Amino acid sequence: MIWLVTGGAGYIGAHVVRALLDSGLRAVVLDDLSSGHREFVPEGVPFVRGSILDGALVMGALEDHEVTGVIHVAGFKYAGVSVQRPLHTYEQNVTGTAVLLGAMQERGVDRIVFSSSAAVFGTPDVDLVTEDTPKSPQSPYGESKLIGEWLLRDQGIAVGLRHTSLRYFNVVGSGDPAVSDTSPHNLFPLVFDALVAGRNPQINGDDYPTPDGTNVRDYIHVADLAVSHVAAARRLDAGEPIEPAYNLGSGDGVSVAQIMSAIARVTGIDFKPTIAPRRPGDPPRIVASGESAARDLDWRMRHTLDDMVASAWEARKAAAV
Image (cartoon, rainbow, N blue to C red; front, side, top):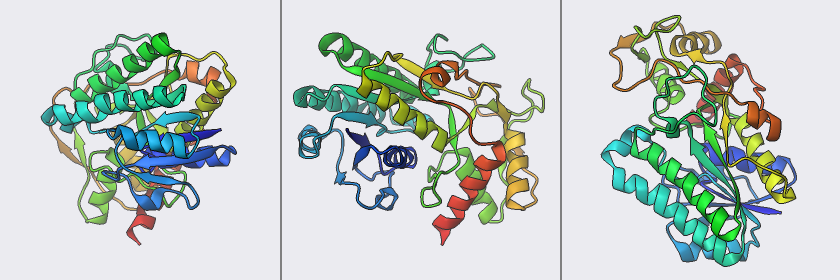
């Protein structure tokens, strides 16, 4: 079986590619390198540079490499920026997904694993988010991911597309020092960049109704997430029953203050975070149950918080060399 990984030169996509290879499956990467890095693609893995908006390019990649399934990770992933760039967000995440699905239909590729997001839930008012928690996205990014799930659903009804969507929560860590999180908006890169520059990292709000006053989030290791993509791909290949969507969550949140303490402990850099005002719309707590994914997709937390920090820090240092 040969799986096309869109966005496979990015932080998450590159880990998915490695997980596929480790499990004995073959991978092809399609990426426009707008946020990915060519050096993240393992040697020997075919690489197609271009956008999922280019239907002819996608068709060619599917045909030339005899692709049997797609893991769709490509997209514009910055929720905050999406508020200022809604049209760009919808073009990349909605139109791009529609073009990809059209090319798949044309080529007879009938299985897909979709990279969705916790952003489809918006600000849930429950302690533990499940797959059935009402969807109420609060950004164009979250809306675009929910529409992506609908597109898969409707193609499943129309042409028998086999599919599942994996909703990520806060993805951190590294499974390979050669692959680091380079997002300018994610917590770990922001903290590491501040420390390297000799600045104190920032916490946005310390007066939330949580045990230590800081936001509680659901942090998961990127390598664990990648394993579940492979499990989903194998399940689709085998024609086994699969849910339309899964939450990849720990069931147990970690506060931002705890993250800061872990970073200080692991890096050996003593610092005291600067406290800034709350960001508008930031909920006190978002934590998800991963029970369904644990049942079907080999989902489990294989890494401790210190493991997550240490692996991310090693990758950050390797990238700076």
